[in-house]
Image (cartoon, rainbow, N blue to C red; front, side):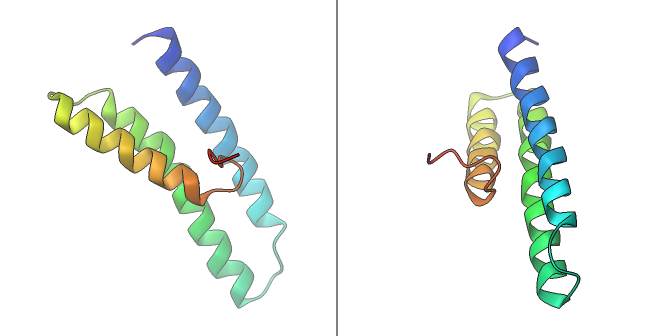
Length: 83
């Protein structure tokens, strides 16, 4: 695994940690719980999909896994790739 991949995985892990902290600060009501669960799932799935992309056998699978990670990153304000 290259240095870039390790750096990217480390950065997504830190971002997931920050997202969890942000979700814990949401209001303690149904809306806060639902939004918090969704944002944590999308944030953590970025790292999971990137990790999975490192173990694929074909370039097509690699492209698929990294595109899923990018799509999930766009949902997460901590990982927002648009700005």
